[in-house]
Amino acid sequence: ASSYLREALEISLRYGITVYDSLFIAQARSLNVKLITSDRKQVEVAQDLGAETVLIE
Image 1 (cartoon, rainbow, N blue to C red):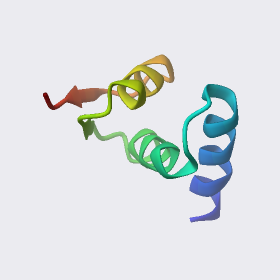
Image 2 (image 1 turned 180 degrees about the horizontal axis):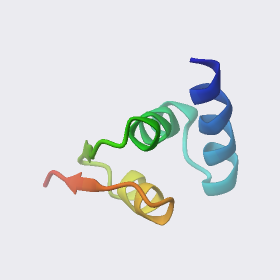
Image 3 (image 1 turned 180 degrees about the vertical axis):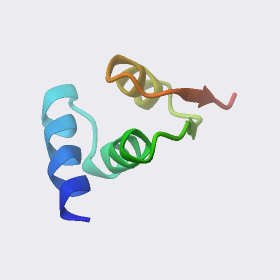
């Protein structure tokens, strides 16, 4: 769990998004699963980091 938090903090600081949103990205990357969200910024960051995403509109 602490590894998620560490990565989420790094993502948050690098991209200027909340740690809360960054936690979902960190977990999706770690578990190699798609991130499904309606948050466009979160999708942009996740894709920049190589995570697969699905944007719900």
